[in-house]
Length: 72
Image (cartoon, rainbow, N blue to C red; front, side):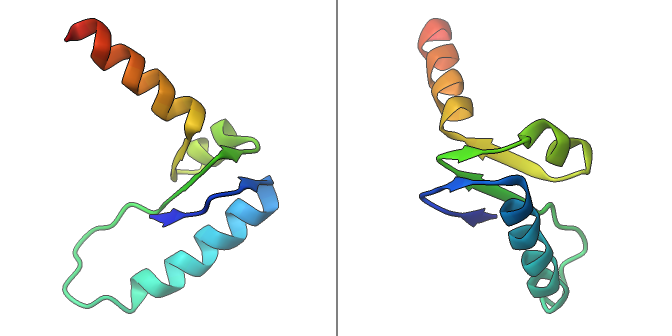
C-alpha cells in the first residue's frame, strides 16, 4: 500500500502503483500481494479498482467510520 497525503490524479495513482508492483516483485517468499494506494482523494478511483487495485481515500475512510458508529 502506497500512502500519500495529497490529492492524486489518475495518472499519478497509476504511476505509484506501477512503481509499487516493481518493489513487490523484489519481496521474496510473498505468495500473494494486493497492491493499493491511499490518499486524501484519488481521481477515477472506481476505474483503478476495476483494474484490480485497492484504492482508498478520505471519503472511503469517513464512510467506514460512520458505518462502524452505527453498528456500535
